Image 1: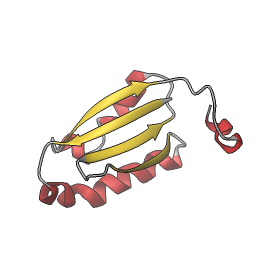
Image 2 (image 1 turned 135 degrees about the vertical axis):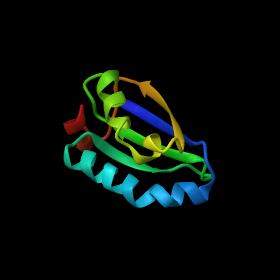
Image 3 (image 1 turned 90 degrees about the vertical axis):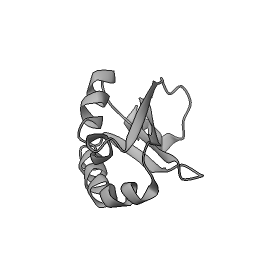
Image 4 (image 1 turned 45 degrees about the horizontal axis):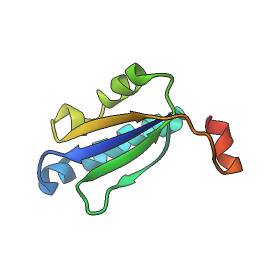
Length: 94
């Protein structure tokens, strides 16, 4: 399991330009059961994605398709972790 922390490197105007395509990107990986949840950070300095991937390379490959990445509008921190305790409905992702 991976936590992806996005940090915007451009102003919110530039982020808004690519937001529709970023959401299409998110939808693609939700449909492939790779993304579990996502959302904006508070304050709005970036975003967070919980990702169910096999390894860090897969996460990097996924990120490479993000319009925010393609337009150099965000940087990404990838944190790998092993879920050891979770609500019963979450078990299908582990």
